[in-house]
Length: 290
Ligand code: G1P
Image (tube, rainbow, N blue to C red; front, side):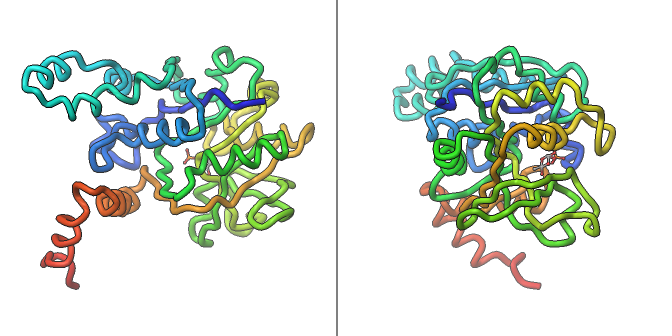
């Protein structure tokens, strides 16, 4: 079955990035000239996923405003004859079908995904955590859909992490069935290093079969007292196979200050308008010496 829908949980409070997240949702933080969430949406579009379901919460109206038409900008740009800029203000929302639902309480990622159940229905669907910024030649969602097409079951994106970082992620145990593709045998949310079954960490891209909702409805709060998506996926494993793809690409944690800065530099160096100026600035910068 084709994947048409992607769920974007976006109700989190972004506490690691305080104080900016007091008034700006972390999904709206900027990489060059676009908010993080737009990169995730563009990744979906490149994989022909056009139905975008955003799970928002209190203080997240900036996301809805962003994807609305900005009539004031359109009028101004037309008046000033800046037609080339018009495309940049209305392009993305014309190409997607957007729906929103609210997660009234931040009860966890699993609960956020459950909020989308009525909108997803009985179809397999994608989940994108837009603060996982992934720079890759082939968009990760496309890499995952290729696997889904071949195997027909849920697929999680994973990457190897250092021992010190294992306890920050969902960690899988799997049997490698092809280069970089694992059949999952077990998974655990944010284990201590001594309990971790491997160093393969789940990154915020999932393709899930709709059966996940049967389990999300019933699971009890897990790590951190939250309804964890990882726990529901673990239960799903008892009824169907699940795969993990060690994707090709570089991932930056947009919820972490240093990683966000690294991503700013990488995307700045990839952007044709900013590349040469940024490179020159870094080379000459007095701040680049110890
Ligand atoms: C969530 C998931 C975790 C996953 C991570 C990827 O955690 O619960 O399994 O490894 O996203 O970014 P969070 O970062 O929301 O605490």
